[in-house]
Amino acid sequence: MTENKWESCVRRVVPYVPGEQPKNTDVVKLNTNENPYPPAPSVRGIIDNFDISDMRLYPAPDSEVLVNAIAGRYGLKPSQIFVGVGSDDVISMAFMTFFNSDKPVLFPDITYSFYDVWADVYHISYKTCPLDRDFRINPDDYKQENGGIIFPNPNAPTGVLESVEMIEDIVKSNPDSVVIIDEAYIDFAGAEKSCLPLIDKYENLLVVQTYSKSRSMAGMRIGFAMGSEKLIKYMNDVKFSVNSYTMNTVTQLCGAESMKDEKYFTETVNRIISTRENAKKCLSELGFTLTDSRSNFLFASPSGKSAEYVFNELKKRGIYVRYWNKPVIRDYLRISIGTDEEMEKLFKALEEILNG
Image (cartoon, rainbow, N blue to C red; front, side, top):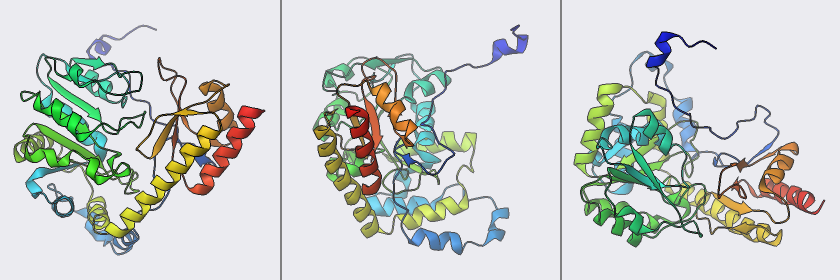
């Protein structure tokens, strides 16, 4: 095919590929780490009582009601909170804001596969650091010259949790770089495992979290970053230079309401953790090798059958999990934690596939 002259000016990247969203709703969907339970009940009241005439107005650009709710929940100043349309938007904005040196940004070789996409989109140099055989980070890899650091904790897709002490070692060793810890799954590991308290000690540390997992609001698209007032101001300066009205009014109100129901939040998270721990036992009994996932998914390698084969056989049965045909992880499946009933359907199907 002949290339037009204007195409020479196109910015070309290999895009991020999200998990499949099947149109058929009569499936067991365990491939995108969504929460199997609904949002806090009081969120329904916000939607039911919203005055539709307010749709004609622009949303609050500073998302004040949402920012204040998040700040109150985490004991921070509103000036320490940045919100965006999902944590993907937040991290993308952080890449644009902080990763502008000629030195490479560092992140693991096995990690959230959006990081290298953003680096390519923004023409940011990067270098990946290999995880060890147990899928753990070697902190010494992050003590080399760099233009910034980012990694998830727990990691994705492995689910492995690194200690706050190890993360502090990395942050302390990089005073000249911004370090971003992507805590999308931290609520399933325990609040005490978050490195959020470190933002009071290190001005260069940014902690990112999301409503998509533990708060059951992936469809609302709410993400937020917490850090020093200086970091947050820089991010807002960039955001307001790109698009001041990124988050709609209903989303802001629902996000603020969700933060108020701590009891429901705790019950839901604990329910998922309980199902996860039971699933580890069941998969081990089926011959799977697993990481000690501390997220809302499992990273599991089947025995006797290839992961790709199991993936395809599950799909034939209407059960969706995630598979990547990539080096090192091609023997693994990532399995989101569903309801107890959904997981039982998974176990039954796996028994048939592995023993058939």
